[in-house]
Length: 273
Image (cartoon, rainbow, N blue to C red; front, top):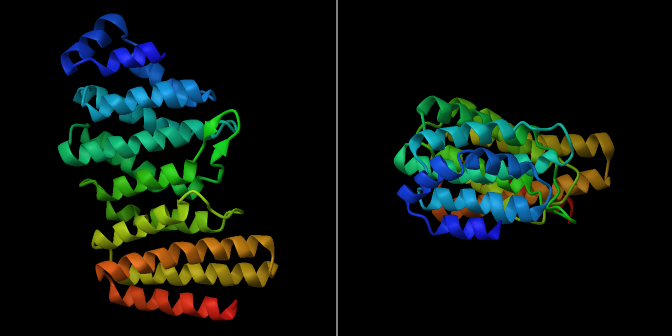
């Protein structure tokens, strides 16, 4: 595997296309399918690295990029086994790179890209796997990689503002999962919200969402009391929204949203001092 990866990294665009057509016509599909492999040597060190190199060096044609995007999009909804998280995660991670590339050059067939952006917008709504490193299988990271893809999607020129409620619902969903995030998930969630703010999303919509998030936290406290679940949800909520407040303050963006965040953050810190 390492020898093949080394060989690919030395090819020019023309040489790589010749290699695909004459030596490895199934290479792209094989690499995509290997993202489901639980062996990190195959998935991370070979398949992901090879596909990432192809994107970074722009070795793929528009047709191949469209094919890759379509195949990766299909992996986003794979939930048939517990290990399917690796396919979802690495599909999301690669789609973040694909979307960023297409944001600059628009090479992917527009309908395919539009459908992919819609799929990514709802990714966090349905993701419940909070694992990071899995012993013997490598990195899962569905939520941080899904957040990276979401951030890239928001920045794409074909991004549809109608999918914003799905994105906001997804962020709210991950705040109440039974874990405390330790691998920058909270920072990535805050960046999703900051990116929406810079995309001219109406400030009242984000203010309403923040209000709903703290109402959700109050509801958890009312329903279950000072449980482990409540404290985890409180920690995640405050980490994300304090980070968002800091980002908005530094960039002098959305002053009314800043005021709302400040009021809720100080209220919850006094309540639990």
